[in-house]
Every structure is written in C-alpha cells, then in structure tokens.
Length: 221
Picture 1 (cartoon, rainbow, N blue to C red):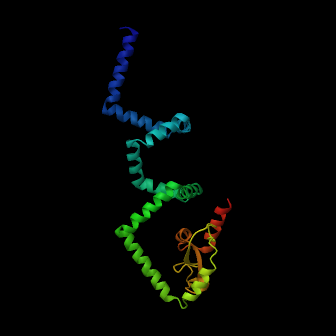
Picture 2: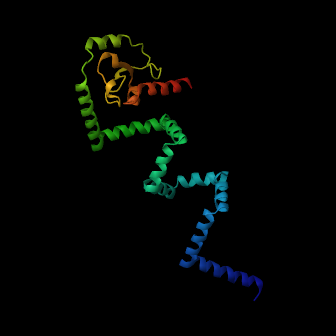
Picture 3: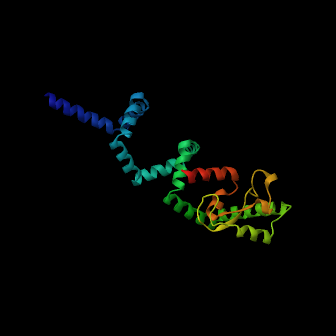
C-alpha cells in the first residue's frame, strides 16, 4: 500500500472516530482541557482582542443563535449573578449612566415606565407608594398654605436649580417625605422648593445634597 493511500485511510478512520459518540465526547473533553489551560486562555484572549475576533463576536451576537444564547444566559442564576456583580463596579455604573443618558436609553425608560404603570404590578406599587406618602403627610405637624406657595412660585426664575435648564417648575419636598431621616420630613413651606419635572422624577426619595452635587458635576463637565 502506498504512503498516500495509508494517509487517506488514516484520515478516514480519524473522521469516522470523530463522528462517533465516543469520539465526540473525547474531542469535547480535549477542547475543555485546552480552553481552561494557560495556553488556551492566552490564545482565546488574543483572538478576541483581534479585529477578526471582534467582528466574529458582533456577527454572532446579532444572529438568532447568539440572541437565544444571550437570553438563556441572562435568565440563568450564573448570568443574573454576573450582571449584579458587574452593576456595582465603577465600569458598570459608568456604563449604566452613559446608557441611561443616551437617546436610546431615555426612549427605553420612557416606554418601560408607561408599560409598567399600566401593568397590575405597577398599579399595585403606585397604590402602595401613594398610601405611604399619604400617611407621611398626615404625620406632618405643619403644612404650607396656598398663599405661601403663590409667593414661592412668583420667585421662580425659569431656571431649574438642579440642571440649570429653562423648564416649567414642579413642587417638591427638599427633604423627601419618605426619606430615611424621619426627623427631616416636613410639609412646611421651608421644606418646599421648585425644580423641573425631570429632576423631580430623578431625585425621588434620594438625599437632596448628594443629588445636587451629582447634577452639579454633570453640568460642569
């Protein structure tokens, strides 16, 4: 038998073995060992950082198979844990803030808020929040009057003190009625200030000083 015939026979035998259940199992085990080795990790990292690797990653992520894989992983315990760990890192927070302030992020949040408020869970959450806020208002010993509010509105310059943008004012409690510090909860005029609707929604029950400093950093960048 000639050498070329021996090679063809060997290749056919190898192909037959590779296609068999035993061969596939052996190949998967070998791949797993290589991928977990130092050499395998270095090779994979080098390819992923290359132009070909990045292009292949983008192509796969937009494919049907890639989207299904991403969805399954995101819903798995490992995927959820990984997402939570990433979210609390500096890179994760920066990435989230960047996305939230982007046009696509704002549109998604707007759509999500509308859908959530119309859902049974959203209605129940808002009803619970309204009840808690009502109890907090009832607990306040002093309430601002219509005359006091009229004076405050007359002083509105048209510029929101949080974002420095020309917008319509909304009434807000400087120290939130549902804030952590119960001693600062008040419905007196001294605790009322005017900010735009967008900043009012963003502030929520957050600490007002921290919120102002965060917005100041954004406006000065």
